[in-house]
Length: 324
Image 1 (cartoon, rainbow, N blue to C red):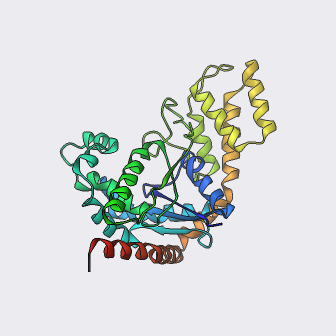
Image 2: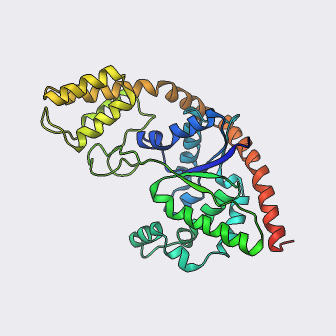
Image 3: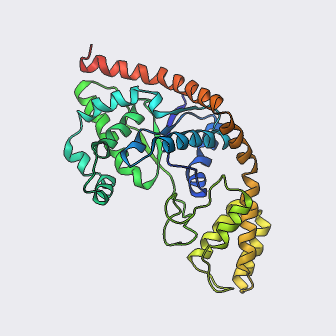
């Protein structure tokens, strides 16, 4: 039975937080280890260029993302892990796709509307053509399924439209990938539990945080009067459920129900369990970042593997559209 092909990317925008891990990375590792799919994972450094950036920060964030993927369990022997810009076939196919995509289709993208509204005086062309590069990222590996969050469904639908256009004009080439929509995890901001935890704004819980840092951040988390519940409390209980033993979760649930819960104890417990869960991860990440040469070699090897597939697809495309 032929394996399905799965592809996913993450932008190089700094250390991953608990929501990133539970909502995506954890599932990627499980999928890889199941042996049921050929997996491609990449760090989307080119996509990061659409927003203001500093070269040193971009470079550091890219290496940190690579180290975190590896430390969290992505195995370069089982999956193809690479940095986007090291596979230039992505950019070349993106140009071809941009010539098949209408301006109206690009301007309808919700993310373009939202981000350009915030930067009316400095909208770069990359922000508009971002979906063409995303389509190239995906279709060049001809995946059968693409794990996406709800905010990327529109971009994936445009990818399917681009695949359909190309196939109709030049012959069957690209499968239209299914959207494997990730069930949204409601990991909320500690300080503002009405919105998702994110890398911007108030301090998120990073999976690389030391236990004392986790405890300091959690102490600031909003809760409610002792013995009462609230969105903030529900968020903390959800975190406890992911990382603590069932017996301890039930103890805190009972205490919450009968009004005897102490939120200070709940926060200390969550910090302890999250810190313990990621202890090995933190050590692996430190080792990888301490040997950046080896880390870059691993990513270069992944890019070489990716280029073998991407090169075949691009050559097929060039022949079909008449490029010599």
